Length: 329
View 1 (cartoon, rainbow, N blue to C red):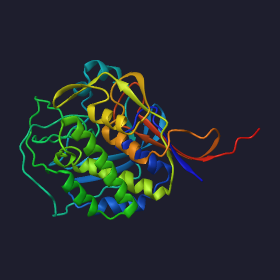
View 2: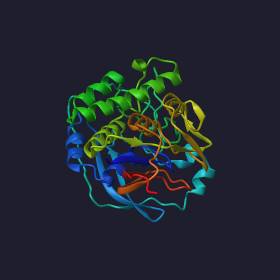
View 3: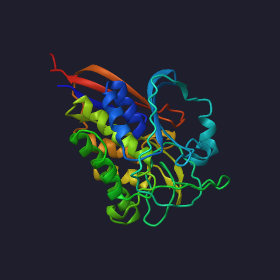
View 4: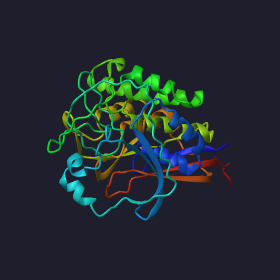
């Protein structure tokens, strides 16, 4: 029986996991069908090959339209000038192959109008939801005041996110997994902000890019037909990140809450930066069935998923399909 081993030596995020599962052999046709059916608008996505530290990896990138977009590569703002300088030479080189661009212009959207400052951060899935604040964000909601813009942005709570997922074409197993991941995030954010999970406003988790990531994780995983998932540890960085409420320690509160609630093993890297995002932690928690690797196994397939952040340790998630072997004397 084949098992999935997630080797999180350089952290885990939503897009890294999608890319690793695709590289491992997840069904792209099922992914296309699901993502094209999402009852929300404003995005396309690309699947390409990139080089991280000279290693060929798969990259999954959700691209938002002008109304929904965020500029999320401002490492100097997110982690400070020192970290940005350390990683300046590590370029994320895209070899654009296998593009899957899909415009989504569905009319049945849950929209509220909010004018707010434009937020700059790196990957599209760090979750800091807040009960009465309306911010356009992906992973870390923070204001970069030199660039102020106004956008119309969907306001989504857990109920609205559930409606979107229920309106997406995928298997019931995949749907259940996507809902489970969102529920884990809502619980962790609610605990962090002292509100019930039903009262958490998914201003960035509920943003379409994060919905796409989580739906994609669920569909890709389901297509692999794996029953057991091994996650020995999550490797996280050190230092701080700048968020809406100021500078927070790594791991951020929602991620730390997930690590605690699900008993995930954590190892801190001697590297400044955030390597485990709330979506990554929630997906690992939802999928993991054990943290113990078999003593002997054969590697049946390898998937490498690239992250977007530029750290001195390349952000690569390795997913392995393994087959346990009986120990020989």
